[in-house]
Image 1 (cartoon, rainbow over the protein chains, first blue to last red):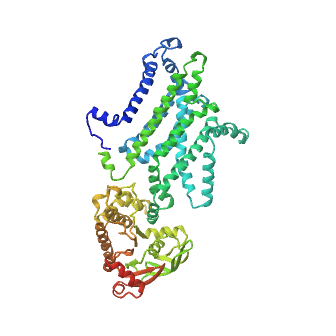
Image 2: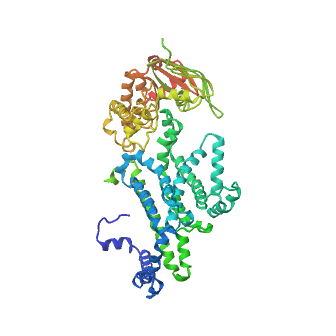
Image 3: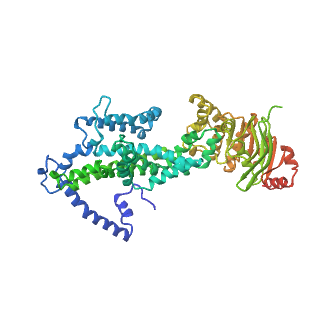
Length: 359
Length: 246
């Protein structure tokens, strides 16, 4: 496995791609497949594509017509959110990005307490910005859509799933039989049901059980369903992390006189959560992609609204462009989450070789 | 004579069917240094783990500093504040720096302000001769250094009694001495200490009494010199013969 360090490109090629007859064959096969796929794709998506114009009449070169995406971009991003109020969405998302900064910049750690408070306040601020009231015109949730709706569902799902998962995981390991039973049943129930079923239940069944005159917003019901579902998955991921913390850690914390919640908050959870960052992000990514299922209860997330656009009469026939765009947006966001998780993992690693990595 | 630091009265403990502590009677005077020894599985670790409630006992009374150890959470909490413990595997918190390991409990349990807790921690880190590592993580320290930090961490709660559960058993031979030196110094300061250890040199140097256990019972409880010169039981003679042979 000796890797030539900083050698010539030729030596690198020989060592990595042509080291044996079989490897040479595989390399050639790979190149051939790339040659089959990439040039036509490039031709279609870029070289022969249309970028300028305002209507389908401008799509004439036979390649992809990105005019379609450009024309629909506001709709893809905001759904039917009134154009004059879209700044509220931008502001809300922008605030979230600012709040995410401390995850990436370790030096901001000293403002930890303020940061936690801001995180706790954010859902209320965002809810007010997005929905309105108190001086802002109300935008009913039926008009929310596109990437904005995807972010709302996924974001609130993640924000709720993490604490819910932590509590459920702790509960499932509790010494109190009742707590343990309740948490186990909850987890197994929600995990054993497909998300589609959860969403159907939330939109169709739940209203039947509500007292007359009381109606929960359709989006809110979906949000609750998604949060419960993701929380059950999250609980099992976190439980895995809890099991990975050596028993000696709890013993040391107990011997120091820490209460149960102090033991969990200060000693066990920081270690358990760090251990399962990949698993947590896995749930987040799955959740983010699963939000597209809300289409079936009549909410138009990014994918839903793209689908509506490609089937609209005046833009028929731009399916490929629409889906490719949706896929690209999903991929960029999911890959971004994956990168952030890798970065967090490296930063929270306190073992000896950390110094080397940082150097 | 003031009240003893800790008392065991007819204590019994079972792990399932296994009777691991049998009719334990032991009184620990203030400032007394006791070494508990015995063969593997004799119940010596379990004995000191019962003293701060890490293991529950099923029968008998354990009284620490006048507080009886019961199921009452508050009694357990009060006892744990007065009893420090050092483990075989150190059990430092790997996600916290050395300093944070030492300030965690004083801030969370005793509610000391950070500055005061850090001052206290630095004092004890200096006493275990490792103040320069305050901002390192445990994973970056040697075993001996980690164990000294663990001792400092326990001392930061300013306990009345210190328990040592085989503190040198997981260490490489060349690191044992640095830990024992710290323990000898601590013994010299008048701390009440219960040490489970196989380090007979240490026992001979600092212990006032040796408690010898076998099969869950206290077989012998005698002054140090008498124990080493003339053990009363055949079992203790055998044990000493084996452990001092090499």
